[in-house]
Image (cartoon, rainbow, N blue to C red):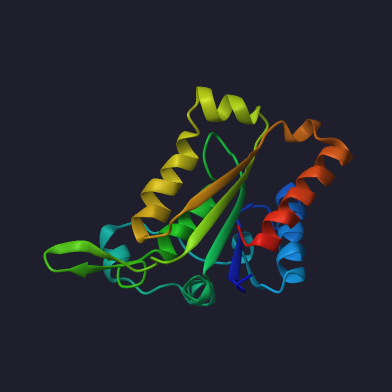
Length: 196
């Protein structure tokens, strides 16, 4: 098995306490490390950065200094895993703000000829998106068509060349109980060991 460089991006916006997503992140990391993979972590809620408010700032503004290490980690990684809770049907705003900041022109993509988005700067990387939610995962996947996760996969990750992107949707989190949490942790450890 080939050793992989894995970046775990924790997108839960609450930095004051640990949540299910943190337990899943820890389990994934333990499986990956036990298998010999290299692992780094980014906890978005612990970073202090402003939101982008204009096209000009996105195109020509400086990356906030607090995000330079995260961008370096993204460049280093061969596989990214994003963990976040579904809030109002989408990723939390702080995670979206983080992705907008780090996926800037010149890093995440570059012009190629007349096409300003022609070169995908993060091609060659794969990803997994791990989403926790209160509703049943099947309801989100089939009735709501997992719209926000599909948008993340297509319009952010795919746009900059990250593929393939796999997803793990965990529903009814308030009813998991200790056994359910332990089962999902075991699944995360297995995925981590395989760098999937």
